[in-house]
Amino acid sequence: MSTAAKRSRDRERYHEKMRTDPVWKESEKIRLAKLHSPAKKAKWRKNNPDKHNATCARHRAKKCSAPGDGLSGEQRKQLIDDAKGICSYCGKFYKHLTLDHVIPLDHGGAHDISNLRVACRSCNSSKGTKILYEEWTPPKDRPLTSNTNKGNLEDI
Ligand SMILES: [Zn+2]
Image (cartoon, rainbow, N blue to C red; front, side, top):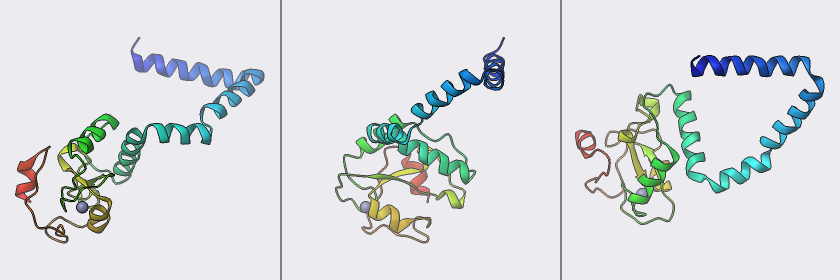
């Protein structure tokens, strides 16, 4: 039996038990409420900011039907750590950096490591959904260096 078939079978058994066993259903409701409590979610978010941000970014990308595989919380953290606090647009040092889609998701850009740049909050919100060098120019006109794919950026 394939994994998908087992999962489907288990799901069916779960729903069958929910329908037929009211005592178990009540205990399951309590278990789920504890598992998904807002306090627990907030604590997890605080302890796993990179995973949380990566999940939110994947959700936004999915809403825009953006292509690309996205990136994991670890990949996101690695990209930001590699920048050593330097914004790739203005070159200034910041304690907190964000990831910017070079080609905005609204313009068909991919939610993919090849389309992401480390940017400070100021540059990221100033750029918004504008296209780099067409609608928005970085505050400091400096050659962009990339730790991901320099080639694509030089083509822009
Ligand atoms: Zn900046």
